[in-house]
Amino acid sequence: MARGEFRTLDITSDVHGMIAPVQFLILYKRCTSVCAVNSVPLDPEQFLSTQVEILLHGLATPHPSGPASS
View 1 (cartoon, rainbow, N blue to C red):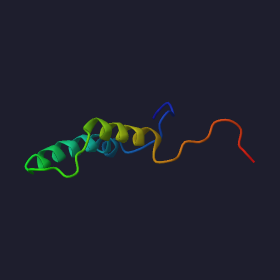
View 2 (spheres, rainbow, N blue to C red; view 1 turned 120 degrees about the vertical axis):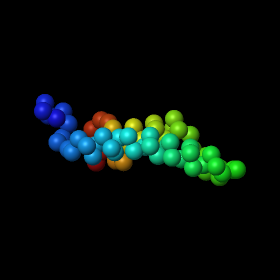
View 3 (cartoon, rainbow, N blue to C red; view 1 turned 30 degrees about the horizontal axis):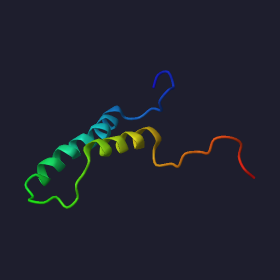
View 4 (cartoon, rainbow, N blue to C red; view 1 turned 90 degrees about the vertical axis):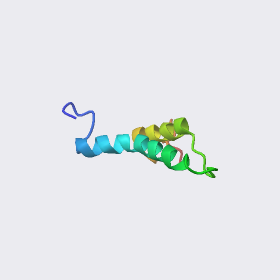
């Protein structure tokens, strides 16, 4: 943040926001392990990959490369 690479944010909230998906996976595994059948299986690697993608790029659509079309 001091070098201007990242905008100024509350570090504590940011850290909690980044570890929350892992905490969710732990709870998800614990809660669904007591069920005989999990009707909504979750791939942990895909879930975390999606979380990282959202963290790095947000929910915005990618900008087309090249000159703007008229």
